[in-house]
Image (cartoon, rainbow, N blue to C red; front, side):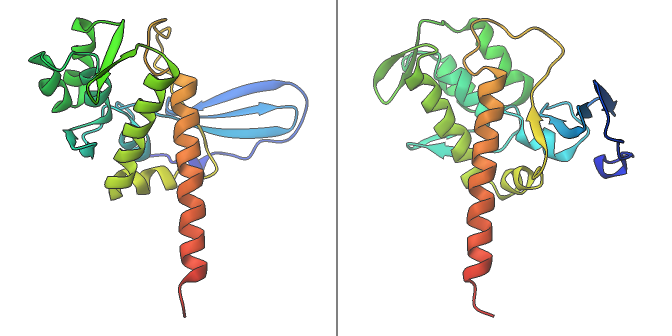
Length: 196
């Protein structure tokens, strides 16, 4: 199977164009600058993209609550604490987790005994904490994220983004990039501080 490293170097020049590679990678060339991207999708054949997806089954615990995936968390908090769907969503991953969103309200999310306005800054920070917990608690997910060093992360499903999404594509990729940079800094400082 071709890898991103198998891509042919582009000659700098004028104009802008994109060369898709395997449908999940692309190289965009704009005015002499090439940018390599990785499309973060659960259906990707690239092991890194699959592991970075919120649907991937990497369990974590946040504030004492066990979640089977980031997507299970994102959907679970949409249900009030008394709802029978809430714990089911928390313990789901993949498409099953995503389906819970079809039945959930979009006015509030519930966490720590409080109703938080849907799509608010506090709601997005909460999702960010859950995604961070996934990488803090899963060595496989963490290694996948670190292995994307040098790539621009995108999340392009081929469908228009739903206007009521709780985590817009751009915000998701910005968060992943920030976590990756923090992990790389930590990894490098650990390497330089380790005695010979």
